[in-house]
Image (cartoon, rainbow, N blue to C red):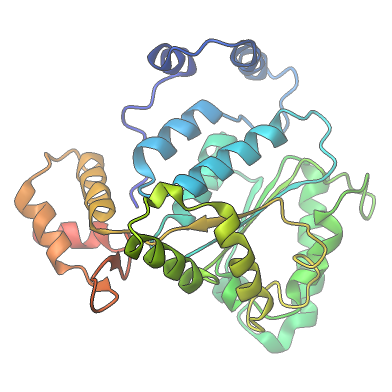
Length: 321
């Protein structure tokens, strides 16, 4: 899913468009101004929630639940000057539905350096934890890494990708950092953000959305209450998931389970148009149609959901230009 910000305006213009003027908005603008002068900003932490909301609204296709949950959770967390615990989100869904895209946006709109910020830490099981036999060393290294970086900057973002492929038992070292406490190992960690990304629960989410479609319910009528229990069960029953016996779910350390729904043809079309705009190209209908016709959809009878979501849109566009 192409990361574009075309059309997103500064907060003042954005409020003008929506006709929303509030004390909270004014307070945020003052905070942003003071932040620019470095009076109370931490590290390169420069939150831009209006920009994030705008980007999500324009470019995150088909994800009403994920968009609302991420924004609501982040707003509540950032508006609290002394949070009791770090913000902990777990993103779940089928491949290509926008999980990695959202995590990259969080880095971009929270830190001046985006994903390149020294206070944004991205972990991949293939790169950082490739050998399950080295689990004890990984646990020691991960604990030291998190503790050391939170000591350097309490406003740190930790992204854990492909949780389904992490060595079981590794995540238990994070449990002390995710709950409510004043300090852990001498480090104040309550302003940190932890994001976990996985495909677990994706099949269960797809089934709920499929049943809603068959019942002729609007996609936007699907609620978190319908999805959260089945996602939690899928994770808890999966011995290959990074949360397996870590205590993170059992002790309710997640602030939100964020479901990403499977994408339909019109959602993929939206992604194609976004990618063309990102490339500075006109929306040529023959290219859009060719990309969509080359994609595969499931289930076999309905051909409703994209097998790869928007993940391969960029490469397919290049092929058909």
